[in-house]
Image (cartoon, rainbow, N blue to C red; front, side, top):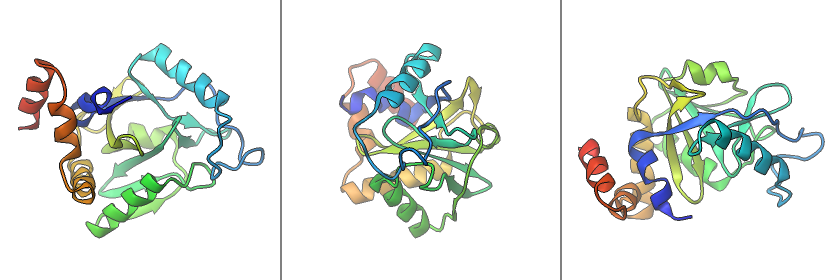
Length: 191
């Protein structure tokens, strides 16, 4: 899958959905281990796609806390603070760590803490991180808007941080690779 699949999400955000399936308990399989036994993730992703074919899943742990998605991490922003689940609940990904470093370098406080779905419903902003797309804004959660339903200012600042690391505008390049008229509509929305 290339960046054109995610290009629209960079501007409009994606729909984050909690599937019915839960994460494998940390007592059974430490989430810090990036394993290839992904059947539980595949099942959760299929459940997510039943709700919305383009949605991205946020898998809950067995206690109902946010964990991760099928191949990345989840963050939210509340009152200017970037929050993400601890690594005993989610993969300690390199993209996750890079995003935390970008936030700290831009003066955005970071709180690594257990999060519940309620925290997403009341968040100002939210996004996923993963190697293929770096950072993907989420503007809806289980059908409801996150914050005002648009990609937030802090998320955009962090996206700029990713561009600085890459040495070019990752997100603009993905959008410009799209076919018209979607490309033209997204470029107009970006301003």
